[in-house]
View 1 (spheres, rainbow, N blue to C red):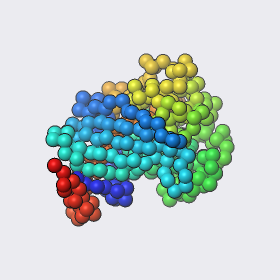
View 2: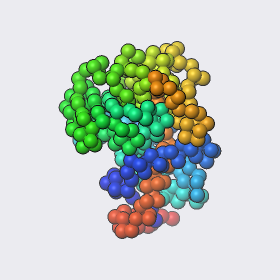
View 3: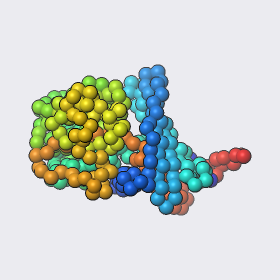
View 4: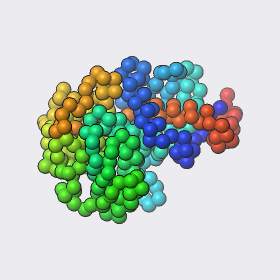
Amino acid sequence: MTLLLSRSDISGLMGPADYLAAVETGFRAAEEGKASSPAPMALAGEGGTFHAKGASLGLERLRVALKLNGNFPDNEAGLPTIQGAILLCDGGNGALLAVMDSIEVTLRRTAAASALAARFLARPDSRSVLVCGCGMQALAQLEALAQLLPLRRCFAWDRDFERSKALARAALGLGMAAEPVADLDSVAPASDVIVTCTTAREPFLGPGQVGPGCFIAAVGADSPEKSEIHPELMGKSRIVVDRLEQCLDMGDLRHAVRAGTVRPDQVHASLGALVTGAAEGRTRDDEIFVFDSTGTALQDVAAASAIYDRACRRSGFEAFAFASDCHRDRH
């Protein structure tokens, strides 16, 4: 039986802590040789790009996931920037286990990777967070980080000030004092954590804007054309990547290497190496860390597998009502 899972189905199955556990499992498995992922594929659309990412995860049973996402930053009102679907298959017999909407999974697994990196790289007493880019990803980032850090104050910055105000209101609901800001320079130096989740094609965060000990989750640069972190700031920071080859191809690391401020061999570690203990995280309070997060299929297959298992275990889950008709006529 193939499960068909909508975004609302998925949102009722997993919370931030669940995604954190799933993503940690994926990165650990990759380091231990139990997961693999080829390079993603990009297909040009009109006004956006489609990304296809696939990975396998072999724990109790081999699972394979393929995600196709459309990324259209200037989408018309009512349509999300990122949307698509994930196919989850049994790696032992090829059976299609689930077709699931990718929006919630992409949002949450991306935020979970930032939170996982923060566990090793942010100062444990971090109280203030600046979120640059106040779209759908922003709140997911706040919710994930709030699970691990004692965040008490949030600054929200976006080129659309109405979005900044909306995120500030949402942050109040998480128990944080929140302020929408129009001037990045006034708040960035005092922020313990900075999340950049914009669609920027030119870097906007530089070395003069970041204080000692800051942890930066650089999330927005998920294609070669995008850039958020100035190469000079990358050169003055310790860099952790989700996947080195991918960050060299499409992350902020790509632009820093091309600018000559960072060499690939200067990258401190991968997130998987931190998870397994093969590399150490923060050792001094004054270190500036950048987590270059381009989004990997390892996160997708780990999250999708966890979602599928929860759906199967949940008695009376709505998907079963219509999933039984899926592939009834397959040969």
